Image (cartoon, rainbow, N blue to C red; front, side, top):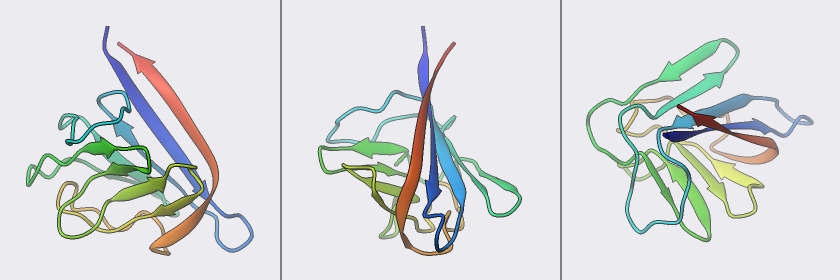
Length: 120
């Protein structure tokens, strides 16, 4: 059985509304090291669907600790960062996915979060 996670976040509806997220090849967990595979990818609806697949440049797919969840990395920022409360987030361009920032604002307030487990 292979479990994967689909994380979907939307930003504050009062100021700007955006939907974006990540498909992670491995279940989320606390780890000192990055985990996951090249099947991990980012997506956004800004306003059209954009998908950012693994660039092959590094393997900083997913990392998590008790303070935050990070997806993608290298170059000084995470493609998607969420705090432990899943309330504050940030998004930057990163070498893992060669993505554009997922949000129009680097720092944002999360309005809604959905996490789906996919079993194969």
